[in-house]
Image 1 (cartoon, rainbow, N blue to C red):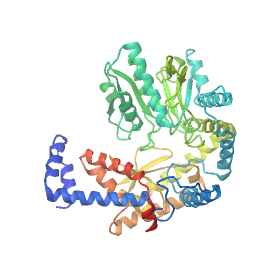
Image 2 (cartoon, rainbow, N blue to C red):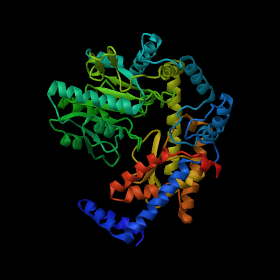
Image 3 (cartoon, helix red, strand yellow):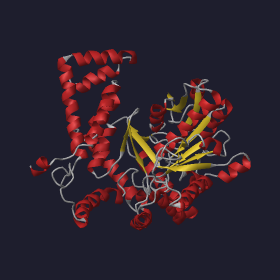
Image 4 (cartoon, rainbow, N blue to C red):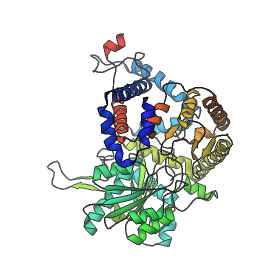
Length: 514
């Protein structure tokens, strides 16, 4: 029996039988061999795709006896970046690079060069770093209507910190809710409630900080079901979470209703606006039908916003905002009895690269309100164009009601094979599961003239190719097909851990010589 047939049969079994069935299958030598062979093929394909320079570029598994000259090192690195930049410069990559203009990149590089030695841990040496961070937080809060929120509720004093990225911002917020619940309510077994579409960073926070993660279903438009969240809450719930928008489908959860539920139950509410924080305020100004997601809602107590995405700063910065400094204090770490002196740190990290915060400040001051408004208009207009184009391709349909992060699927063709066919045409898209789908997160490179039409033409050709030609081996279709269909999540977990192991593999001199 073929592995895909076995998995198809197993996937129809009741969930309560999955674990015993997995143990049974692993005991059957013939079936186990087939699964192992398929698994090894996937790993081999994965290693080839993740290490394309093997045998082409010198490897350094140990320190060179004598250091190489700077020019020689740069000569090794420059061709790799030139090759890797081609697709995102052409607007063929989902997300990843959000601005991409050469002049903008050159500007950020100059700012970094000025501040490369700045460490925000040492505010006495670099007080300018404290200025930059405070103003990045203040500008972000202002963009998200902090002044109006304070007018509606005089107790509001929006504050926050700059972190290393959206994941750290989320980690900080969940730590705050855990520590506040412990200190003010005596909660020792905390839980957070969030829709299945919320980012895995919340699961990471749960794992790191000992918070139970309770995920709830979404509706047919992939928006959180508020009634399901209400039913899942209990006396140990410390926070609810909503996405604006969610990464998988680009759909904004019903934040006002969710925040109202949190306010009524006396728990925190976090708006994950890592993707949308620098777009939704401008979409609202442009008249797009977006809900209020920020502190104007009484129940919203924290918001994560990524400056390094649609804020167009360099990778490595995000902002976590709180409704009041009382909350932010639970984020801080202090050590008062260390022989090395007094120690205080506002976020997860100790030393913090001030150059990245300086870049975020410089970029926000450079772009300004009009610049962000214009960027949002271009993104949203391109989103309208591509959404209409996808819906016009026979066999494809859009999931939910997105604006600029567009997920699509099909009941007629294998959507993962369509993704692989698009990869062959130079596009880098993101595969989704439950249900199987693909999405494209639009960025400014996609707004370049001709890119949207090229994408739609290639997508129509890719769908037709999958309809008429047999599937080719390799690519991501087998991996996503396995991950989406196999009921044995331990196998998928092992695949992901092998993926991470493969990232750390290096060439050896003997392999290079061959």
